[in-house]
Amino acid sequence: MGSHSDHPSARVKLDQLLPILESAAESGVDVDLILRDIGVVDGVQGVVPGVEIELIDYYRIQRRIGRILDDFTSNLSERRLTYRTGTFLVSTIQEAATLQAAVESTCDHYNMLHGDEYNSWFVRDGLLYLRIDDTQFPYRFRDDRKLRLLVGDCLTIKTHCTLDSLTNGQAAKALRYIRLKRKRDVADNPQNAFWDVPVKYGGAAYELVYDFDEACVPVPRVADADLSADGILTRVISYLRARSNEIDQRSYHARVFDLMLSANVSQSSIARELGVSVATLRRRLTEEGYTFRDLRTQMTLEKADRLLSRGQTVAQVSEALNYSDMRSFIRAYKKMRGHTPSAYLRAQKAVQDHTA
Image (tube, rainbow, N blue to C red; front, side, top):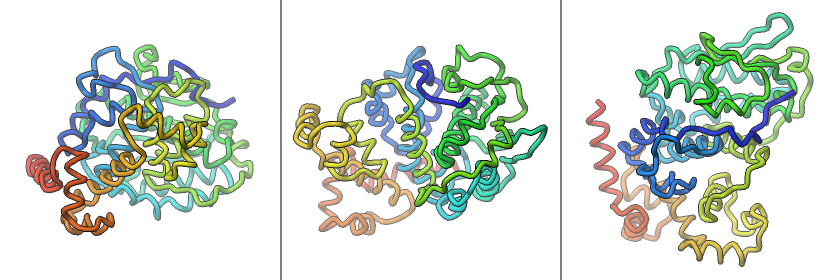
């Protein structure tokens, strides 16, 4: 018994994400580019009722927003956390020798990270419960109940995927049922088709419920696991991609960029991942109006946005990204973004002044 993402109906209604996308856009994120990369060719204009995206694309959107804004919560919380904050706080999770130990570490360290007791675990009647209570979480959109429930559903899926990948599949073997806060309305929330264990509705919090004996089975330790927010989302995306029966219909440049974000940086390794030769990879990118260098530049400039949002000057960012001089950086930035780094900084300041 376990959970897999190979259900073709495990999707997310894109229009429900509009508040997240609009908030990210106000913070300087090019959400149209992100949406086009997952196949929504008209960007935000293409977000209309009835349009759905794959579940994996929800996490791709989260990862891009989080990386650009340097925000561990991907702009979901009013309390910003630096995107790499999680690395040292949750590093002990990868040392867990059992699923039960991984659950305990997950709760302890994420509570430490967020500064409150949102996560807990307990054992009852031979079952191990991981409980996520977001009732008091400082959501940026706390008055939008429908969106909060969607985010909570996807957080529950992300947590289980992370645990399963870190325990070599033991979490899937041990999972017995889950509990969600929403009422029974799966048809209107196709992300919950992810689960192939019983789903109980109407809970006061989210719960992942595992068999305790299975949770105590020793598992191989995961070496060098990146457990920052970026690393976790990359892990979840890779986990879902490996278990999906759906063919990736995205453009070549979107798939290449996705692999770049997952730490594949060489043309040869990405070509192998896509099952083509390097020559074919270059030709497919050229047909779409891109080069490998263009995509590397795009990834570099997303890093530039993160550094700028942390308060670094244009000169400091130029030096950090190894540009020969500041003017070369400004030209490259304007070519890809359509505005200068200084304009980005002014827009960021305007947002901060507006929300202060």
